[in-house]
Amino acid sequence: DAKTTQPPSMDCAEGRAANLPCNHSTISGNEYVYWYRQIHSQGPQYIIHGLKNNETNEMASLIITEDRKSSTLILPHATLRDTAVYYCIASKTGATNKLIFGTGTLLAVQP
Amino acid sequence: DTAVSQTPKYLVTQMGNDKSIKCEQNLGHDTMYWYKQDSKKFLKIMFSYNNKELIINETVPNRFSPKSPDKAHLNLHINSLELGDSAVYFCASSRESGYTFGSGTRLTVV
Image 1: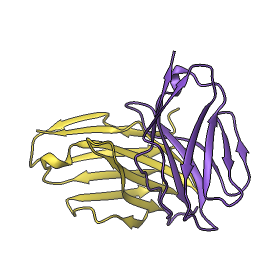
Image 2: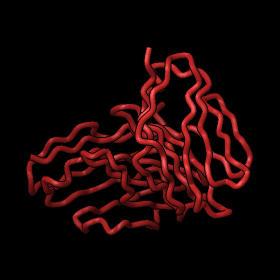
Image 3: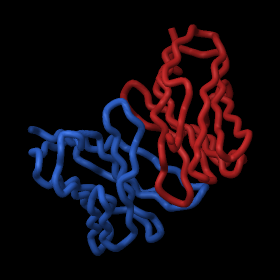
Image 4: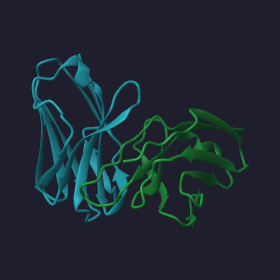
């Protein structure tokens, strides 16, 4: 699985959009970009994933560059409850594949 | 209903003891996993089962023995517990993509 690089920490003001970047320059053609988050003392939570096209769901939007070497997770209106470690993972789908978590980005939403 | 449930939530035990952690998922997923999160917060996969068959074993000591009686359950038995086994253990399940994690079992070995 391709390695991903994320900033260790970011701050965001409550109510503003949080844009979390991720570099995955060695991603292969059949690897998806997944985003998970882990709120303190909880299990990781799936947010969104995509292959080439931008994706949006009720939690967030995922913007993937045309060359697929980087992506941005957007939380449109961050709340204090969005404070968490956000993990960007490049992985294939299927039973034999595994999610390999890096160190992630600690997003601190400030009041 | 909790999608992936683990028991117990907390487990404190002495070195050398044997303990088990149970995991059940009601999502109808085919694949289940155990992850370990150490004190430095690294999340590392330990095992993966697909339809009751072991498919991933990440060089975990053989004191750790997963057992999957059916595809909705994946239990983790640990023999001869050591101080270094202290961690939070997460169970997860998936079908094709998008893992669902349990809330974790905090194991403390004293």
